[in-house]
Every structure is written in structure tokens, then in C-alpha cells.
Image (cartoon, rainbow over all chains, first blue to last red; front, top):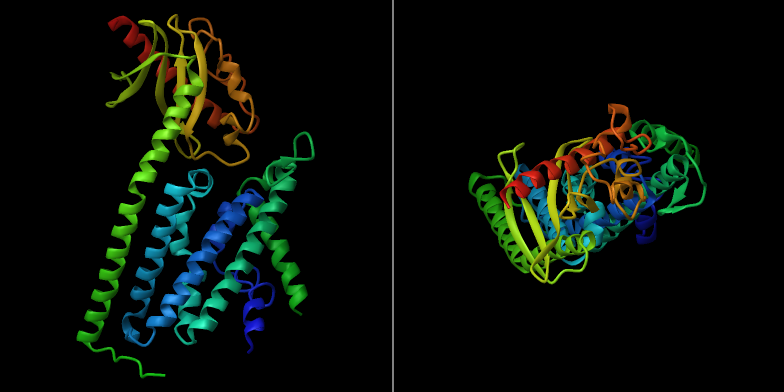
Amino acid sequence: MNQIQNLTKGFIKENPVLAQLLGLCPTLGVTTSAFNGLGMGLATTFVLVSSNLVVSLVKNFIPDKVRIPSFIVIIASFVTVVELVMQGFVPALFDQLGLFIPLIVVNCIVLGRAEAFASKNTVASSVIDGLGMGLGFSMALTILGALREILGSGALFGFKFIPGEMILVFVLAPGAFIGLGYLIALTRKLNK
Amino acid sequence: MAAKRESTFVNMLSTLLVITLVAAFTLGSVYNLTKEPIALAKQKKLEEAIRMVLPEFERLEAIKIKSDREEDSLQFFVAYQADTVIGVAINTFSNKGFSGEVRIMVSFAPDGTIYNTSVLDHKETPGLGDKMQKNKSDWSNQFNGMNPVSYRLKVVKDGGDVDAITAATISSRAFTDAVQHAYDTFLTYQKEN
């Protein structure tokens, strides 16, 4: 597989949310608006790239039986670094996303890529894989967030363009399930 | 590719030890680096809220007044202009929110009229309950200039005078409750002074 395929496979073909159905908890939870989806996606991308990089660097050093605890410690450290840095230097963004950052630790996409890809591939491929998967995740979350924001509050990225009341259920949890269902169906159609 | 290290007891132990040590060291240094900016950011947010809810003041005095509702006390910021009290900002909260604590800053004029409000921290539903924030909607402006002596601090559904946010009655209730909490404590403060 060449590196370009390695990067783009995360968008549609192996999209972590829409094709692999991983990390659904943050997907359903944070996508009340396009901005939240994008922010969560980019924070996850940073953690994915960093953890893939480190895991592929130390993969020969870690004995098989303790690889999962080792990966989790590495991932959790990166997440905490992101949280502290964001809180200290971009408090405006932290106000919006602060609640969701610790959730990245339990996002199985990050552990999944460390286990399935970074622990078996070279450093360069692992970083590209992390980047592709992270961007695919961001894309899925932004689309779902935009869909829910438009249908639920008649706005996009906070700019209201449809006046009046919209379909309330799309802002609440059921809207996330409904929207995600249609997006997954669409991805399946594209992958056929 | 070098061979993987075997899963012997010593290997596993040393690996985990090294990884956790490196992680602990990294986190410790990042924490130290960001400790000051985080404290500054929080302080700035608080100061902005105080400045937003109070009229121009010369001197600010921070005191703690025991609240009759909770074990904890509420933080009062008394604003002085030429040695007269012109307003009191209160850092108040309610636990009746849709998802946890709602923390707001409320200010009263010396006669007990609500001067202004500002949301400090909440976890309400984005798109619904977050309309209590000034930058999302002007819902919270209805409190301004009201005196709780005649203005019943309850949402209309509960027989009060506060119009609730559409589809976020619980969040509106929590906000109103936090104002009530502040007002009760404000009365205690007035009795003492």
C-alpha cells in the first residue's frame, strides 16, 4: 500500500466512525454543532498522530503481554497534555470542548490504531495512518454536527440562517442516532 | 526489524516502570508549565464577570458570607465608590441544572434590585440550556432591574415571573434558583451590615 492510499483510506473506505463504527460515544455525544465536532475531531487527530508516533517508536521495546497497559498510559499522557495546554493557552476553546477532552482516552479509535497499525508498521506509515484516521474522524464528526445544527437549530458554525424553531429532536441524543444511521448507510453505498 | 522483547517478568516490569516514569515526568513538567496560565485564565474570567455585572467602581472588597442553604459560603465582591457601597456581585450556584452545577455571577444594587447577571460555568445542553449565556441569547436580561421583593424568582410554569427558555425549563429553573440563592444570602449580608 502506498502512502497516499494510507492517508486517504481513513476518509471513506476505512472511516473510523462511518465504516469501522469505532468511537461512537464521543461521536454521539459532542456533535450538537459543527464547531464542537470539528474541535473534538482535531484534538483527537493530534492525540492519534502523537500516540501512533510514540507507539511505533517503542514497539520493539514493549513485551507483548503488557502492550495494552503501555499504550493506554501513552495515550492518556497525551490527552492530559492536550487538556492542560488548551486550558492554559486557548481558554476560549477549552470553554467549548473542555468537557469532552478527557473522553479521548477511552476513544477506541486511538487504542485501535495503536494496536492494529502502529505496533506493526514503520514510524512514517504510522504517523500518516494517524493523520488520515484523525482527519476522517474529524470529517465524520463535522458532517454529523453540521447536519444536527442545521436541522436542530437552523444554524451552521453558530450563524443562524433559518429563523424560528427547528426540529428539536436533532439537538438531543436521538437526533445523533438518526443522523449517524443515515451517514453510515451513505458510506456503505459509497463503499460498494 | 529487531526481535520483540520477550514477555518475561523482568522485561514486563521494567517496561511498565520506564513508561510510567517517562509519562509521570512529562505530565509533571507540562503541569508546571501550564499551572500559571491556567490560574491566570480562570482569574481573568472571574474578573471579567465582576466587571461586567457591576457599574464602575473605585475599590473592590472580597468577602465570604455563609449561605443558609449549603455548608459552604458564597463569595461576595462588594464594590465601593467614594466609600459608599454601589453594588454587590455574588458568585452563586445551583445544583438543580439539567447536568450538574450551574455557576453564575449575580449583582445587586444596595436596595436589592438585580443589576446584572453573567454565567461563569455550566454543563447544560448546547443549543438549548446554553441560551442562558449572554453571547447565545438575551434571555438572562429579563432579570435586570427586577427586585425580588415583588419579582417572584420562579419560572412561569412553577407560578413565578420568569419566562423559561424554550425547551430548557430545567436549565432556566437552575439559573433562577442560583439567583434566588444569591438573593437569600444577600439578605443575610444586609442584616449583618
